[in-house]
Length: 337
Image 1: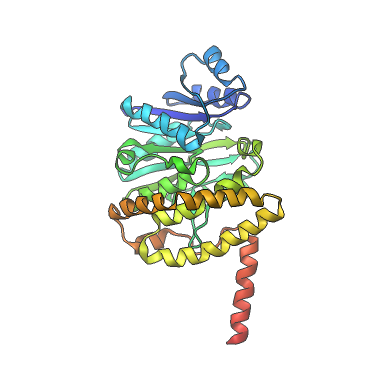
Image 2: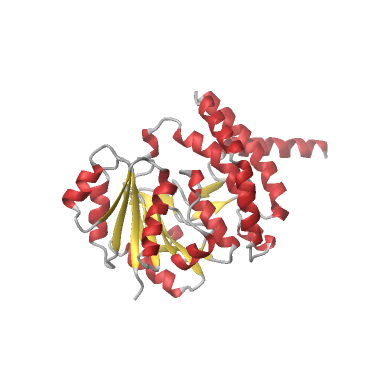
């Protein structure tokens, strides 16, 4: 029987943790629950030690980010000899059969390295994610986000990537491709891992029967400009590390336009300095990412043509500014023709 664990990274999530942990205690498939506390100061650790004695708690002295905290938990699970580990946000509440559904899908598909969940809003009104997609514009986005929670995404299928908020990972795959990139800190580190999995020949599955309710943005909203800084830092790295040579120029040209538009939007929102800081950090670590790229591409077992076939050849649905620019460009081209 497979050994399974669930890793929950936590930073000042005292209010959200009880519902998350109580739902895990009621799962149809029991697993070791591991909470990695990222230097919380809100009483999270006291809550865990006082009310959840069966939960494995790994306290850290400071916040090392989602990626760093998760990696601590993954290393613990690896040392414990677990076969599969699920990641779950501290503000997510899993349905009773969530973990069992993920494990059954994983065990039925030997080439599956990641199985991701159907994530819906905490109210149940709309979808949060049914798998992560990556576009030819170098922009990732959650499939189905903000769409009505209907039966549209009720089929098991391969997707580009799994959300780090509620996905199961095969340790055999992690031993081959490595854990999350801690330089990302938060945002797109799960897409980066999924991209590396795809390049190494692993598959990512979406299991619609594995359902969690998620309070979207409850952690990131506590820090003003957090999303702006992380996006400006991480988006270029995601492409530079992972996109194969035959596609890289095409992706980077489009991403450059999107990047400039994001920067302009940040300035308008009064977050220009944070955007500049994110860009500066991105450039400082760019040589390191190029070195990582060489290692990743050297181990690639699939063709650029295959990667091209699993990309989304369109903009994310909510990229309204870019869609307007693209429409204007097409209009100009038609006039010239």
